[in-house]
Length: 199
Length: 187
Image 1 (cartoon, rainbow over the protein chains, first blue to last red):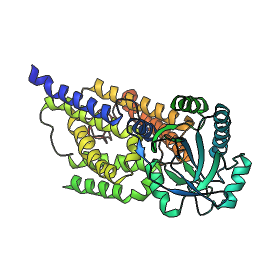
Image 2 (cartoon, rainbow over the protein chains, first blue to last red):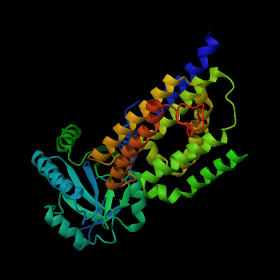
Image 3 (tube, rainbow over the protein chains, first blue to last red):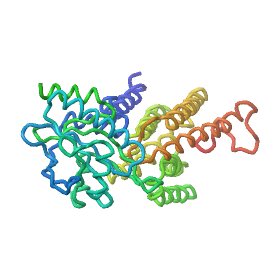
């Protein structure tokens, strides 16, 4: 009797186990969800990288002196999501400024060839990024692929000479680790997270 | 022998579609992956799953592989070197072969149940992929995702028609007999 059911039971248990593992315990069905979960569980060390901002000055990617850095990956001529995301980013800046939280916001271009400092300044002006608390910056071409890999950002060319990418707000905590990912419109969640991080 | 050659052809065609799979999820999920499953079905075409007792475990193995490759994150993973290798091996060996070996032993009601589930699943996925406000696979464009959704719906309609004919009108004489209407999937 047992011999009749045993193979089926084993196959069912093994199959269920594989699917359980493959979805991180039924918590992540997409690669975006998987990356967010992975970052929460094991924050990733961010290397020392210098970016070039709207005024051609070097800015560090890593947090300085106890601050938290929020990073969005963008390209300046982005038609849809980056524009909305930038408006939300501005709102986060305003809210955090009001609370006196030590934070820096970075919009990092993944198209450094086209996004020159002049081009980034136009984008910055359009969204009232003044370069103090929030600035637009580009990495050197040689650092780009490493950054995209570290943050698990997939950039694919679209039909209109632009790009589509998994847009999000990436948190680098004050210990220099990439430790959380939020939706670009999750203003409340980001503000709450920073309120807890720096009471 | 003939079936082995056909299986190798299907596998070769699937591998030839590598570039296309990267560009289009329809090519990836609805052409390349089914070709790999087909390769597995064909390679085991003349094997006889001799013992009924193995039918259910084999079916469960096939279902596990099927559900695994249906996960959006698996589709993204299949474009990385490790995932690609896993795809080429597991779709024929863990889906095609077990499906072929178990299918002849499955009761008609169970076959009907599986087919009905495939149809409803395609419908749900089609709706999800055409209406999702965000990208479900990071590797593909929104427009490509919507194409895939419509392709799922079209496939559901075609399969529903194919599977409904024998149920409604009896088994046509010109089809190979002995199957429950699905001559292609190894019955």
